[in-house]
Image (cartoon, rainbow over all chains, first blue to last red; front, side, top):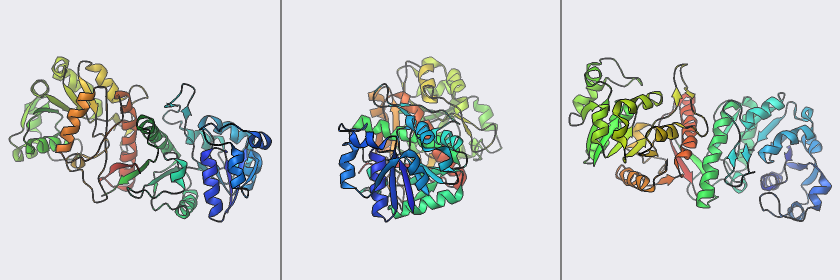
Length: 226
Length: 226
């Protein structure tokens, strides 16, 4: 499949490399290609500059947001949460029409340091905001409660985690679930429509607060069912 | 230990029976003893009338809220969330002074049917409201994301779940953790101070919404850490 990823941070890179390795055509979108490739300082989460990663993954093209959104049959939102809306605007809202859009983002405010503050309200989660911003797309909230390395390599020593998703469109959730299965996920839990995004974003705070408290970042949730 | 439980529903009964079986002295508190024993209809969650349960557990005394709160060295709040504050008032706030208070409740509004609506806001979770109402007590939020039968019998076929707790007082959390260990819990995760109660209450909505969507009520969360 043709996949466009918006965001050049750890999540975008990790998803891109995995999806490319699985045989998909993958591009990563950014605000300004030249600026992104010119950076020599670590990225916002302390990872290496994008060009270092890109030199190791040269077949994943770096393009403008709008090109990535236009190219992809499935699109992944992988920016900081407070940049998602602007990224979509730059990408051109019409480029999301009828597409499956996987929203991995969280409504986090890092302006006061870490742990970040939660920046959404019930009934207006980031997933819902995005679905409203691009109403002709099929937003699926997913991957927002785990680190990028676990998104693409889910099996844990302690067991098989669950991948929680939410979205309004059943076919979109099915398509994403099949992609997740390719990535190694054995269990996808569909929580319902996009309003469930609020509980997933809230759940991210459990993971994030635990991570900062215990300096532990190999976390994934499992819902024991029996 | 002397344990007082506020609430005669499934959670209160199940905790009482287990804690009594473990050798503790246990009383259950209610608004009006005669009224509770006179009931012949199912309780609010469809369980049998209290007197049926009580005839099978005659050594757990049913007393007024104030007697239960006065009696217990550890107190469990096990009422409906929207009744918790009034129960505490009836029990006498001074009876909570210096005591460990385990808050198992959730801020749920069942007035529009099921699934219930969430009725708390960030920074004002039910756990925080209770800690403010009885500031001289040591509130520990716990047990609010699992069914009562799992509180007292945590091991699942699919693994050992985690018991998430939050509260301001370290010694109170330690005391509760030792009680939880007696009840079979192998892993207690301390998320931090009582403000973390919000994320636990939000997490309950994942469990509750999943339960209603899939009619599945043997659920428990596990945080895979490696």
